[in-house]
Length: 141
Ligand SMILES: [Zn+2]
Image 1 (cartoon, helix red, strand yellow):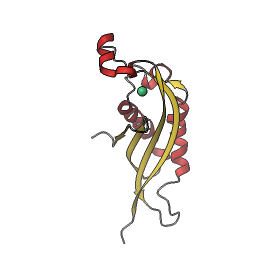
Image 2 (tube, rainbow, N blue to C red):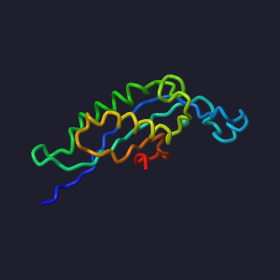
Image 3 (cartoon, rainbow, N blue to C red):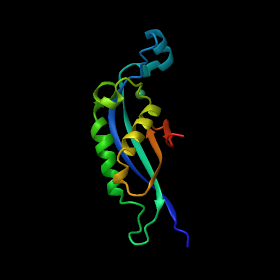
Image 4 (tube, rainbow, N blue to C red):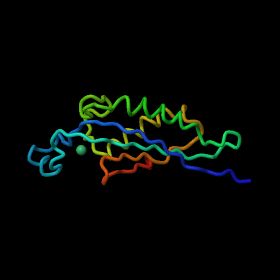
């Protein structure tokens, strides 16, 4: 009998400020590249982490979503909520905090907690920056 494989996702929301600015470009180049996002502003972010794994025939779960929620709150929400991402989050300092860069950083934070997430495989981190813009990262290739 084949074991059913299911993707499960937990979402956390946080609010944070950031500024898109690349130190290796001039002020004029930064403004031309990032437009209004070169100025300090904020977003109400959504972050989704998806895990894939077999459904345990006894518990009916891939993993307990409470475990994923705890990891995401500790690694992402507690570090980023109501912070200035460029300066207040040590593991983002020196990076340009675009949604793409955040997705990669969040993947790494959650991946470092693999032992808390059972035998599941992380398949996607989605960072939702606004109603119209979001990015998906599927891990290092
Ligand atoms: Zn922004």
